Amino acid sequence: MSTHQIMQGVRHAGGVLLRTGVVTWLIFLAIWASIAPFYPPAFFPGPLETLAGGKEILLDGTLVRFSLISLERVLTGWLLGILIGAPLGILIGRVRLLRQLIEPFVDFFRFIPAIAFLTLFIMWFGVGEQSKIILIMYATCFVVIINTAAGVLSIPPGRVSAARTLGASEWRIVWHVIVPECVPYVFTGVRLGLGSAFTAIVAAEMLAAREGVGYLVFTSRLYFRTDWILVGIVTLGLLGYCSDRALRGFGKVVLKRYRVADAGEFGK
Amino acid sequence: MPRTNVVSIPLAPHAFVREQRAPHEDLAAPRTNALIRASGVEMRFPSAKGEAARILAGIELDIHDGEFHVLLGPSGCGKSTLLNIIAGLTRPTAGTVTMHGKTIHKPGRDRGVVFQHAEAAIFPWLTVLENVEFGPRMAGVAKRERRERARKYIERVGLSGHEGKFPHELSGGMKQRTQIARLLANDSSVLIMDEPFGALDAHTRRVMQNELTRLWRETGKTVLFVTHDIQEAILIGQHIHIMSKAPDTRICQRYDVALPWPRTETHPGFVDLLARIQRHFDFGSEL
Image 1 (cartoon, helix red, strand yellow):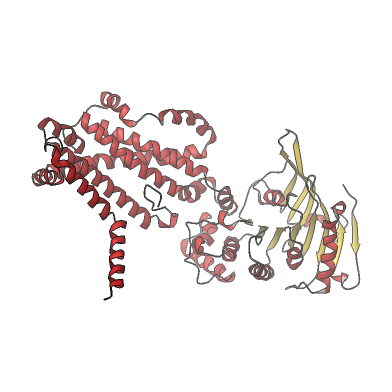
Image 2 (cartoon, one colour):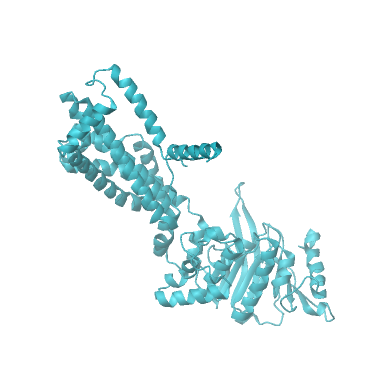
């Protein structure tokens, strides 16, 4: 093998590592590991101490149980939010009067994060599961409605006319033209909604829960287990990352014909 | 309204063409049994100044079953508006359009439309086959039957082997073929076509023009075709209506063309008619 070929191989492998994010994470870990020794572990634990702490709660089952609980809350509220948000979005996009009535309202609530409603929801729906799920529902619903309505409004009028001249009734047009036409927009809303759902659940679990990843992050401080706080944060990131990846995979395979874009945060 | 003025020219090459000033009450075809009839159709659009601009002014048009009509006029003269009215997508501000004697006020399966921009008209999430069976599906035709019907017309328009493709995998000509197959499978008796070949390259365009006249003769459908291209009008049209420019567009002249299909630009009858129609456009006063 010539040096040229070796260089080419190295460059290729480097490209793969860069694309898959391995390089990014190695750099991150290196920086973390080089800063941490300057501080006591109770203040800022290094990667190895965090790993050890993680192993501890992983082996006694707490981490898995908390993750599943948080995930269950997120998924339930998120799915309910989609089920309510998508049809509402279509209705708002389709009915001009409704849109005019609701638009100012939307522009107002857009700036109020879901967490702001937490205390209210706890007052109204109790400290149990209900208030948390409703909070996530609210957080998801909102982005889904906005994106779906935007999708309905962006439908080329020609497609609806075409369906009409082919003999489709107004109801069938909604189901066979408007809905498929909106799929990519709903999907964007659903992905953004998942992000809001995670934000909301962590906040909710910090304030009112005895289990869950948010609870772990919040209470570990009381036991001076800073490593567990970091484990909780990493777990959240992983849960979100994996959920989004799964969702994108679903979009790419199942919703392929609707031309759902498999794009990352930067749109690439 | 201008007086009826029929011109018939007996000698070749003129023998292929019969000319008449519109409206044509005293022409051979009796006005009673027209398939589609537009009478006094007027369309006003509100303009920026507040006063309504009159785009169409008293359009008279008779279309009989199985005929091939071309509406030829300058850009912006209201050709597409007239098509939309006949398709039932728009209502005229005055006058009526009837089909089988009944006033048209909404779209129907009997009047299929081939839209100018196929991208905006065929459904991108459906395959060619699914697009073609859309009409029958909306009409509640059983799956097996509508599949069969769709396949038949896909073959008819020369798209066999492309049934499973999605619209973004098709060329411009293939998209328009899909639109045509979609109407044939939906049993539309009238094909309303709004400059369907305008966006195609010259070669594909020529192929599509010939195929359309072939399909028309084979199926006995009634065609109403809009174009601003004089050559295209003469290549395909049986009856060519010249529309004047906006505002107050009327149908100012009708040519009945008896040249055989497929037509060529070098035929003496073609050349003669081209010269005569060109005159309308060269001298605005004739419009």
